[in-house]
Image 1 (cartoon, rainbow, N blue to C red):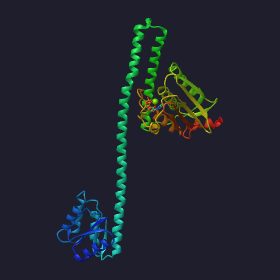
Image 2: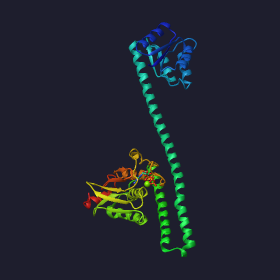
Image 3: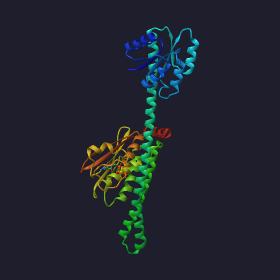
Image 4: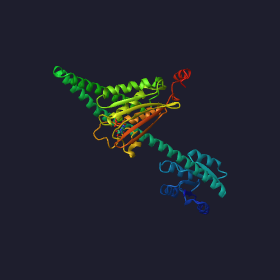
Length: 388
Ligand code: ATP
Ligand code: MG
């Protein structure tokens, strides 16, 4: 219930106004002069003040000045009551910052209209302030989250960079010091450790750059026309070389499938999914990478026979740094699927996961053959070639 303070030295009028306001459902209080009025305003913190101008001890202007000089009462809507003859009084009052005035004698309707319109304006202002505060709060929270995110990213990468670096250093020292005493198989093994560690480092750097760009909203689609089969075959082949001893990676794709996409992002999608399939499935496991053609879309799915993902954790794994509870000692930053989701979003595509604990996981990314936000020139070439 809004609180209204009536400052008026004429007792009968004051009580009449207070009684009117009570009847209209306001909580109303009276003060018999300016000094009493200022004290009551500080004590009661009203939502609105109605104040006479001519009063003993402190007049209405004095009350207004005192209330405006205090932050606690400066924004309370202030309505002057003035005699019809005293137009200059009213002007002076408004120039001091009063919000409105009513001329005596006034009817109940006049007074209520003025009070209600001022209260409504106050409510709207409060709502606006509230919205501004919420927006500011949101911006502050986002800023905090971003800072925390970046700090986590830096900590994670500085930590994870050490492993491949030490692996490169130790293989390199072994090759340098014992090259002649090693047989070809162990030399090759160390060369491929170095190879895979360097790739890991490159992948981490790429991830970090990409996540940084995604986080700051600076990542846009650089579309080009791709032969989907040739493109994904290339990515699969890189993994086949790296994991030839531990996993069998099968690849199937319809011939002559052409699509528009950002090759850097598509590579990230494929390599993150294949790398997960390798990481989270046992040695000797089979991995099936399949591309299928749909109606103006195509899908890339990567299926493994690995550890699977607990049902209740599936939906959270697209958030950065999220990892399932069953990863055991397998290392990871928890960024791969977040990157996959964002890269698919940028292509206006979608990602779905099906998984069964202890049996395997299949992640399927469906992408439009030509995303709507592709470069105009690239779209034109696709249209002219009849691919669209
Ligand atoms: P990285 O950033 O190095 O890829 P990560 O593999 O832990 O680290 P994501 O690729 O984002 O991170 O995967 C998130 C989590 O989802 C993994 O930690 C794992 O728990 C689960 N996950 C993803 N793919 C599979 C899969 N094929 N089989 C089982 N669990 C998986
Ligand atoms: Mg991963």
